[in-house]
Length: 338
Ligand code: TXA
Ligand code: MG
Image (spheres, helix red, strand yellow):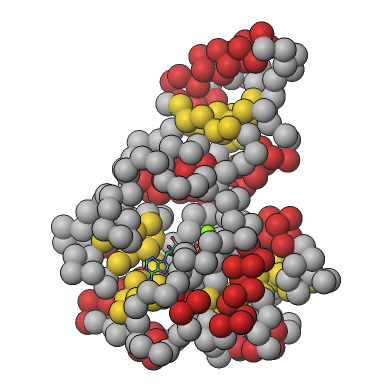
């Protein structure tokens, strides 16, 4: 299959994107978080292709993207609290898990659950596509399962070339990490996946909302031993506080040389603070100067370690506060910690 990469220009149409979705085909599109791989959420055969193309376990539910709040009412039971959150944060990087209106979506879209995750993305290309298609669009991140999520159209092309007909190129994603997933369908609201929109951002509406992430089944996401690695580059990933990066780099370099690797390629992903003293490390990726920049650059950095065929990845560890919670959630998964 020929994969077309189409540049998006504000106020223009998105080519044949809407027509492809309406015909049950897959379209990759930019959002403000990461690129999504979209299909008509109401079309079971179209949604099944998403799982097939990504190689994704089919019990993992998809987020359904909409352009109008009215569509949320058609798909889910929308509480007054949900309505307030939509007014405050949509379009934006917040996914709301709500009770599903029975029969409104096929089981393949919701992973067979009686709830649905809904989100209105803030990227103009995504909104344009959703409006033109006039459909709810199921869209996971547009990466192969297990790989870092794509934050540039080129990343999508790397993973999806020949597998889907169209990628809409809307440039680099602003947030860089997937949306915050907030469960409003359980008796106690909880964050299921942290994002750049933090618990603190939501407290005005949800006083007492915990910063701790809860697993959809009620467990606590910090528990060790998750089933599979996620966001993972080819090389092993180690996390390290900034003040110890230099020392850790030297230790591993020496160990690898002693083990017979004459020129170990250790990729270092860090802020300026973490890179101090590492001038001799050849493979450095500056993540940025603040947590929002780190979030924006993190997945590109992880993908870069594959491009340079790193033997080992050393990534700076961040304090688990605010946006640092979402960054560490992804980094720990990349490192296979949880
Ligand atoms: O930013 C994003 O959310 C991106 C862009 C493309 O919108 N999408 C995305 O989708 O990250 P995906 O499929 O990679 O992640 C969906 C997450 C999964 O962790 C899934 O388990 C959770 O949302 N989820 C979806 N529906 C759910 C539901 N009904 N109950 C609990 N969790 C749900
Ligand atoms: Mg994903």
